[in-house]
Length: 350
Image (cartoon, rainbow, N blue to C red; front, side):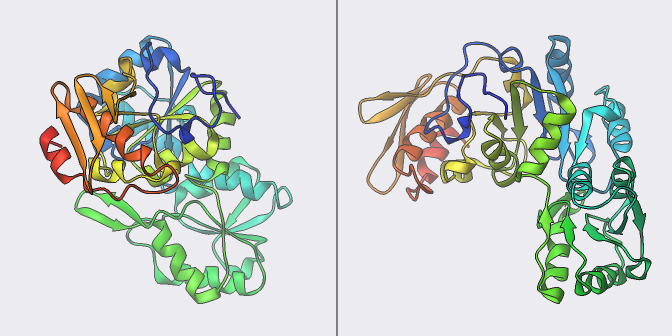
């Protein structure tokens, strides 16, 4: 397990986000970056992502792209990123398919057959680990692996999984994200498909993807990172994954998480840092400090008032949100803050 740049493993359990006098790209040796909602959205690069990643890379920070999507191969992901203006090699991409393939390979013989319910990303990852992908429960697989197979996955594929699992074959899932973003909106993810098989069989899969330890282990093994920084937009996968791995995290507000969700986050979903977008990697991060009955960051002071969060001051709205995190999390150390944040967030324009 790697050590955080601030010197404490398990940094995600901190009550408040610590500051960083140095730019995060200098304080950490490797950024473990989520893709959807962080680097791109709907196939297009998110504002400031391309230039921010270029500056971080030119300054010596390692960049690794970590995704729960098991459909695409690392080659395909790297090609897409390169087309967006982010030069990337396949070795820079870590997928949940790779994590689950390693998990399976540790439990079955080399050269064993594995029934694949998913796409090409799973097949490539299994072959990399010396395993043989098959398509039918009648081909005597020793394991079943399920990953996102795209919107056109045939219903009969789930039946094949059920046939094999009913015979006692162990079942693995790349991840259990219930939804996946698409160009048209939110679509069912691999977790929804896993529920189909779970209901039909009553079985429980071994899961590899974020936020669980197999995915973090895969990223560390492949990157060799000593002081990694997880960068993501989802509290329940990216930030919780960093918490489980005992490393620091940066939440960017370019994806699914908004201010209200952040303020209500339980301890395992609280990031070390928060910023608007990937430009936050290139700057220091201000400290949130106790100030009388409240918490101060920049020109803002936040207080946990009577039934609601309150904020006063001026300056960068993100500093105000950081101060609100201090106030909210101080009264909900072991759970979610239930104070109303609506007026305070409106005051910040968030």
